[in-house]
Image (cartoon, rainbow, N blue to C red; front, side, top):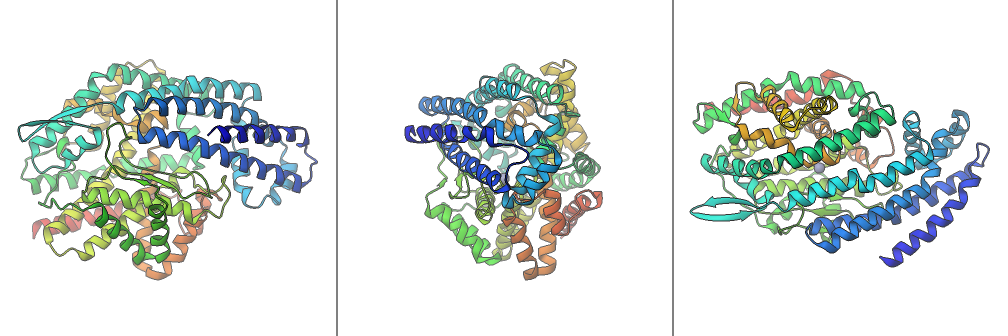
Length: 568
Ligand SMILES: [Zn+2]
């Protein structure tokens, strides 16, 4: 790492010399050379930074990893500040010379265009530097603190007379248990622990939201807090409004589904604890090796290239599946750059759901590897497209399993599970985004943590109507959602991605083999084009409410199918 730091220092010093060469009259080839140099510099910076974040994820309680991450953040802020002059110059450049330089910018074109979209929201260089420096001890530090506080939580559950000490990932396993009492106890324990710290966690949230507003709205003049995320995603504001509106108009579909589920479970009314309850007894578990086999098989059936790429992650030993205390909960895929196989973190516990998560994260990895022909600046798609390959990968696995499984109980369980899952990625996330929109407005008006919790309960009521009974402890659910802390308004990307994939999957089922090249092409484009344009090429109009409704129609049909199965 010392060598890497030294290299970074030397290359940054070299890059700084280009400052005086940047002029409106400069030759296009010189401009391209400078951009290329900046890309190489960024690749090195990403290597260092991701080494630090991955080490921290592997053990969030390791003090060495914590200190190293803080040190790297500091170094990165300094590095960003030293290279900042390039983007500031580029954004400030007049349209005409910018057009000339763009014309021969090759793969960098979209990245350069998108940068100029931020022109109206960019501060002076000195101001940008201050924002960067203050962030390392401000918002970033608060997020590290939030992760450090919440990742050390221990949840105590009494299972068969024995009190177990569990991590969040482990306790969440019990909300999918057949025993309704265990599900209830698991949720209550979860929010007992979060609820105890709610005044502190809520305060961290209020501060982060205020910081977001101060920077994005007051300093950078975005029209409202969500607009800053929308521009970063390069998704026009009206598209996001339409998406969230269509979700609100479709709450009845899931309410109908929850009523069906309560009938299947023999309950008069579903409780919030029962949302993910299994309807059929299918406690089937899968060994890690078996899960790998199933996932690779289902990818291979779609296209052998997909399986081969997924296999590369295992061959390079870039997948951490073990459950350990202090390890980051959940799962993610981390792409460092075009020249490195992505890293995947799982907490594999043998449920069908864990196999699905494996398919999901490997889907991300495949997406990155298919687009590794692009530069470090154009490899990764913007957030709303980032979930395309992952959710598509999950659906391939489900279909494959449905095709193989003969036991009707297991099949029914898979179908129910699929709707459960679509609920948690589509509707649940959309309502998180709606809550964020509300919370950002309320905090601006000086709302207290308790008032935010009341608003959260209201939000749940809007989502579940009379179909689901919500326990009072769910008022603390929002303080347990890391996304709304570290990446405000990230969550609608899941909604966007899942509805999009349902529609793509429909196309695949209708067209078969003819669909495949178009889909792989979409993935291979990576982040080298605007999302609206990438999707238009695939025949999709994201401005149209009808397109989003199409995704819900797929779910409606699934629920119809399930009602049919249930009646039989
Ligand atoms: Zn994902």
